[in-house]
Length: 95
Image 1 (tube, rainbow, N blue to C red):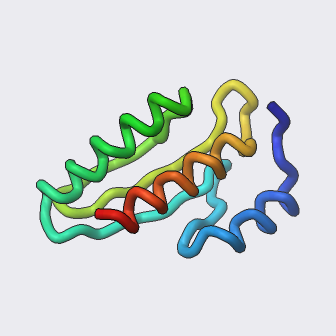
Image 2 (image 1 turned 45 degrees about the vertical axis):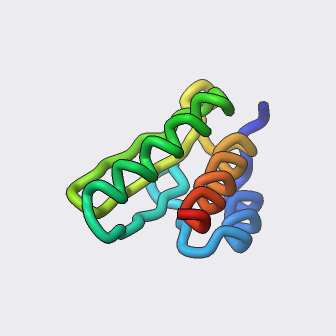
């Protein structure tokens, strides 16, 4: 697992609408209808994260969810972060 350079990160972010690089993580905020929908999506993401053995930093307040991804073991962004972000986008699309 290799830490990505800032240029590599910016290039990969072009494929993930709404995601940004901020404070050492790739981040995105989502807004749902209500808490129940937000929590349902979080549960689906949690199962996917467990399957990938890569876990997000996240914050949920009522119907809003903010996700921050980085690879703690490497101390930066790796392909694992982009793989999970892509999976999260797929989960969000199928809600």
